[in-house]
Image 1 (tube, helix red, strand yellow):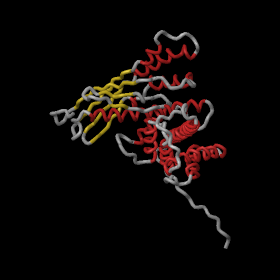
Image 2 (cartoon, rainbow, N blue to C red):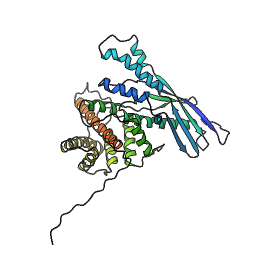
Image 3 (spheres, rainbow, N blue to C red):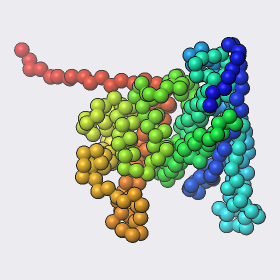
Image 4 (cartoon, helix red, strand yellow):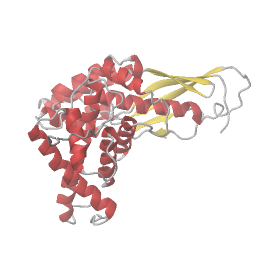
Length: 353
């Protein structure tokens, strides 16, 4: 649907509603450590996740999201769940309260004119783009803090809402396992540092990645949409290879060597990385080049127990690969690296003349 706007130089504000469902984490692991930090992030939400301005072909688009209702809701749900976690009687109707969707107001202001600004989808596109940015910034700051898998964007001028579908599961489970002492290790980072790093990347509304870091971030977004399939192994290698600038098909040892340099790994951890990456690479190769025993789409391990081990092995390797990709990005953030290049050097020893 197209809206007839008469003024040539104008500023129009479009109200939107973000509807968030399933705000609780999928796991209770380390809830005492993780959930207060998630609440703190949203309570003190940096301006970079509340306001964003884009410049697009003569238009200035300003996006504003009020995240305070989310901060209050997370604090309330934490209180509702605490009795169950401590084996004390829960509050009456606690489940109905937790399951209730949360609606957040958002506004998009479009100033100026171009050939696209008169379409209803135009302001919604920039809000959707900003929500994707917030997903990455929040989860790289406090892993698991922004789960938008059951989130939709409603524009009163459009018949259908826009589904966001971004799951924070990989971030959440990666941080929980790190707190158990497992590697790769994820951690909470200062939001101001992550915001500064993300701003320096200057991704904006790009629809195609141009750098290795951009490709890795876009891979995380693709995996957040659906990380339960075998092609996630391909996505993970694409993201890891993009960060360290290895070419498709190069040896795993080169990938390991470069990742080890970024993550500053000791010899024993580097050997473990090599072993796990080769296992993941075997899955990728079987899928890309043939030999993969394709499971039925119904995927019922109850009816065929052979599928149980298959799914569990893939799940564990996928968790490892996702945590490795996130840990590598967090290492770049801590080092304030927004661009990197590996130069191979030839080192020789000659005979005396």
